[in-house]
Structure formats: structure tokens, C-alpha cells
Image 1 (cartoon, one colour):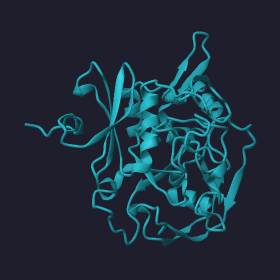
Image 2 (cartoon, helix red, strand yellow; image 1 turned 90 degrees about the vertical axis):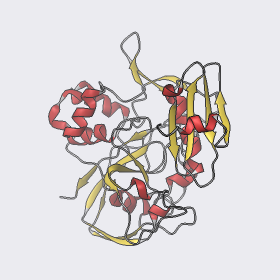
Image 3 (cartoon, rainbow, N blue to C red; image 1 turned 30 degrees about the vertical axis):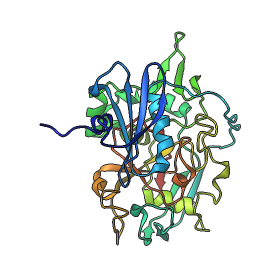
Image 4 (cartoon, helix red, strand yellow; image 1 turned 135 degrees about the vertical axis):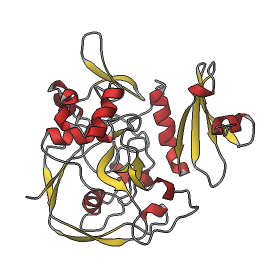
Length: 333
């Protein structure tokens, strides 16, 4: 007999749980087992176990983001009360970083085991874009045939895209008049051309970077830029103005390194020198390796602690459910 799913064990009362949200169509429940990954399970009230959507995280601070992702997948917008997004003021610019070393990683008391230990990292000179790639720029990629141009894609990325009929970011669709719109927690909204593109996979991000003759940054380059010369705990020093915790209910104009959308890096999720697992061995260690890519910066759904300069998120490269986008990098030469 196969091992029973987390959902079946919750229904049987073997794992304590709490209701997160419910309407006439779906129910979402969260398991609250101590020292275990946080699971959010969303299922139709008329469905069977096979229809359950399971999202998992390794820290309770991730729950709000998981709930937001589940609502997006289920097309369940939230009620109002959001701040209006600011006007766009981020121009297309690049920052240059000279060759040198910095201390990467953290002993932050709010940090995860995969952030430890701090260690020197030497980087060649590089340049990093001053804002994320926007919806408007992505639309140019799409309309130029980027999704059909084989030379832009890795073998794995091309196979995934073709097998899953990927032809635009997740949550994008055309109106009756042919205009693009996207689903957000505000509901259906017109495509804001100055907002960062979101809900793209690593494969799509990598293909776009090739399309414009750039690349994705390494996570070390991203952290070097986020820390700056003052070794900031948060990118730029203060996260209070960042688009985090559903401040605007959606993305806002592209800009800084904290919040708005997660940013894919080209780096695999690997342990730092001197890594020790904690608070238990399954926290980060099982996920290390080439199968997962690192993302940085947090998103508009994220808790502020996830926007710290040292925070490392990781996903498989085909994942599109998370509000992830990209920022471009180039070698200094």
C-alpha cells in the first residue's frame, strides 16, 4: 500500500490543522505539525484527493505568500484596502561593481540555516540593471517570437515549454478585443507595462536574457549589490518603502531589489562553506543541488524578513506559480 498523502492524514485527524480560507467552491487548510514543513492544501469541495493542490514551505513566515499563490491559482481575488501603487520613477540604468570581495551569508537571528556561515566571496567586475524586466519589455519578447525561437532556450527549457504549451507568463490572457490582461489579487487588471513581469519560470527568464544579449545574475552578484558599501541587512538599508505584504495588492512599478517580484538568479541552491543543518536536518539540506535555482529579494506577497539581503529562496526551474521575475546582469567587459 502506498504512503498516505499529507491531506489524507489531516482528514484522518493524524496531523493537526487549521482552516485558512473557504468559499462555496474550495477549502484551504494548513497543517500545524511542529518542526515540519508548512503545508497549505487547497481542494474543491466536490473533488477527490487527486484534485488537491499542495503547497509547502519551511517557515511559517512563508504562509501568507503561499496563501496568496493559492488564491491566484484558484482565481480568488481579495477585497480592497490596498495602497495605490506609486508612479514609476525607475529609468533603464545599470550599476557597475568593480572586481573585489565581500562577506556573503549571514548569522542573522532571523536567518535560515542555508544563509550560514558568512564567508568571503570574490567576484569579477559586473553590471546589474537598476530595475526588473517589465511587462512592456516582456511583451516585446513575446511579440518578436521569443517563445518560438529555439536558439534562445536550453534543451530542458525548450522541452518543458513545448510539453506544457507555454506561450506567455502565467496569469496572462487576452481580452475579447485582443488586449493583454493579467489576474492579480485585485482581480483581472490591464497589463501595466511599467510593472515587473511576474510568474515566469527560470527557463523563461534565461531565454529572455539571451534575447536581449544579457544574462541572469549569480546570487553572489545579487547579494553584493543588495548589501552595498554599508553591508545593509535589507537592500538599500530600509524595507519600509518596498512592495511587501500585499501593500498594493499586486506588483508596482519596477525598481529596487526588495519586494515586488522574486528575482531568478543563475545559481544552483548549494550549501555555503561550513553549513550545519538546523533547526532540523530536513530544513534546507534535502533541497541542495542543481535541481533548484536560487531566487532573491522577496515579492509583493512576502513577509519583510524574506527581503533581507542574505535571504535565499529556491525553486525548481519550471515553477511559474510564484510571483517571480528577473533583473538582468552583464559582465563588465
